[in-house]
Image (cartoon, rainbow, N blue to C red):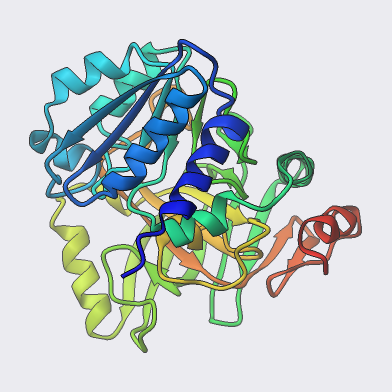
Length: 348
């Protein structure tokens, strides 16, 4: 059985040296749980130590649910206290701390914190997502897309799978990117996307998912489709799996779990087909991710959208329209102002 020792070492080195640019004396917190890859945690710690960083590994039981819904399964006070004092936090949790009170407190109080969520991504997926592209070129491309999105008032996303959804933008809310540069304080996720928080109560249409967290959609014939009305899930249609997902949503007894949280345009240069791992698939080149539920006050000031948890769904190949201007056509970048940088990144 392959142990991927060399691949873990390479990904860890790229993250610590090239992306976080860790300096001697900085404290690098690495959190995980009983469902996480402990060997990768050790590789990150070794990479941090090699450049003079001070690694701190914190391991917990696997929580029953993501986010605030899992708070009782973690040593919350101890984790929060530690994470408010570190320079870097890399989260490997298989059931994520992200969006819980632990995370919100650390992000609000620790102004120097550089945070990255990896969750339970496999090392093969991390090799594709984090290694083998030029960070500065990707940043140039993503910034161009972000600026174009910020100038638009209406965004429409369609797909040959039946998706046809639109929403208005709000410049008071987040427009952000991740290029792989984690050298400054930030809420970081894997590189290769432009993220937007839609204007409240503005999303309408339908989303047909190729992958949906907490549902058996990817790699199956199951159909799960959200009917969006005024920024919330008005109905979930399809077959048995759609009914199962309805029950999952209802189990939270939380109306904010039905509300759109954010929309991501996927542009990771190495990701061109879905593999069933959420962190990677959210960044598929020419795809789109839709997040629902909890939204941080950082992204939706001043109060955020408080919910018991958060989940995402992905459409693998989309067309993206910013007002009447199309920038992506069935998964391919088509706007003339973007094509030269896209060529540098992916070669076509």
